[in-house]
Amino acid sequence: MSVRHALLALLSEGPKYGLQLREEFEARTGEVWPLNVGQVYTTLDRLTRDGLVSVDDSGDQKRYAITAEGREELGAWWHPQRTEAPPPRDELVLKVLLALEAGPAWALMVVTEHRTTLTGMLQARRRDDRPPAGSDLAASLVADAVITRAEADLRWLDLCEARILRDQHPRTET
Image 1 (cartoon, helix red, strand yellow):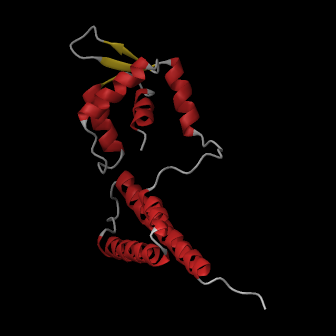
Image 2 (cartoon, helix red, strand yellow; image 1 turned 30 degrees about the vertical axis):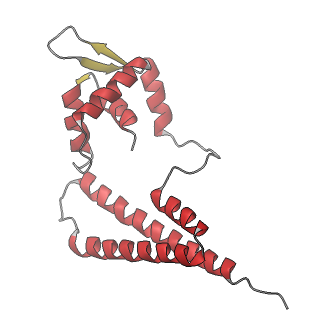
Image 3 (cartoon, rainbow, N blue to C red; image 1 turned 180 degrees about the vertical axis):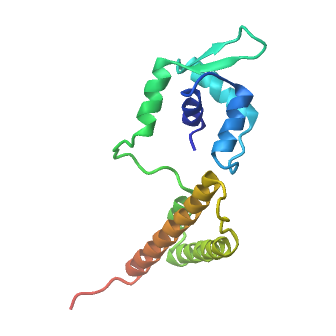
């Protein structure tokens, strides 16, 4: 999650105080990502240092505003960038890759344990966390993202298992 870009997005609407940014961030994300006020101010300090935010400290509180450079940075963030860079670090991917070094049996055990955990989480979410009609859109979208990503992880674990088994028992041509 990019707190940096989220704060720039909030500041693009107009100048705000640090606590106001934290409150708006939490409200807009369905209050599922609590944001430490220290993280807000640390990020604002970095944004100021990088010239993406300006500070007006003439009043009782510091008031932050996005700069032209900040608007450019935010504009680039909104649009997807094609890149050949490696995928972002993902703990599940890391676990499976490291487990391979211990051998196929260990890697398959890691895959199976994660599949079992994800399947249980999905079943519980689908059973218990159905948002009531008229619920907060942000919270509903976050719940959908959790489910969709878990489904994607399950699909990836299935692919891992198939490849590990295939590499463990290669087919011979006759």
